[in-house]
Image (cartoon, rainbow, N blue to C red; front, side, top):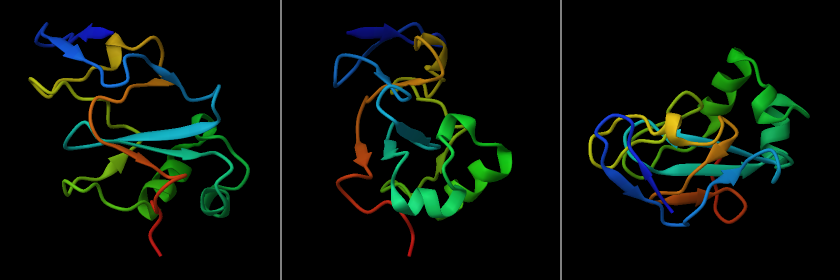
Length: 123
């Protein structure tokens, strides 16, 4: 599936061809603030639970989100992962969030960092 960028109106091809619903898969996700990298993690990840307790990412308050962000590794591009960073159009850098079915959905357009398969938490 492709989506249209609300900003530049160009077509954006999705690597995985569909959207992921974070709540259905008990995942948290954050996008990089510089590129289209998305970082995902299990809401049951012991490191995550140590940081904020037994709270799903979509229920975190501002301070809890900041605490999680502070404990995450940097993006390989040098950027930072943030709950407030939207998926970015690879053509214009505009937000693709309006093209997603809901704020609970995320897309993989490029690099995926999966916290179940690689280290994502700072020591």
